[in-house]
Image 1 (cartoon, rainbow, N blue to C red):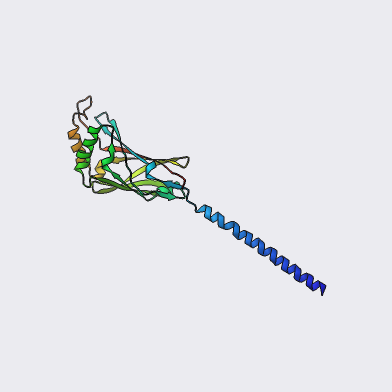
Image 2 (cartoon, helix red, strand yellow):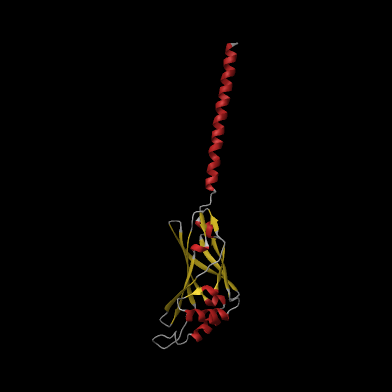
Length: 209
């Protein structure tokens, strides 16, 4: 009789210990899944800048400027790539700045003013097959702009590309700009020229949520 009671007690203790171990195992897996799915990066418009560089004269002298306003909804992701992918943006042309009011007016009225949909440049950044591209709509034309992207310390991001205005049917607008800037775009050779390639640089900072 004593041996039977002892055996029953042993079985109960064994089951109890096994049950405790299983419960501890379940408790450990839940927090790990939560951490893996946590949002780590967020991109906001107030920390993002858009600069551009155009060129004049046959010597291809640079003329720099920027768009003071870039509109988009704050976007987040668990990786930098996820935070940037499918980010849609809109750039008001009215916020173009070159530190020269006369030049600003000529670009707005003679260049963008000669285009369709002159008020807004729209776009979306895509991350596909380990490469970035910006799909940009300007002058009623939507084309892809390949981007070179560098991310330092997993936070500071630089996106660079070169727009060729012919891809957006904007050579007519470029010609209109060159007419009003004819003398200003003359080089030492006396030739007035405005180049159709424009360098674009976007800089941003990926914040913690």
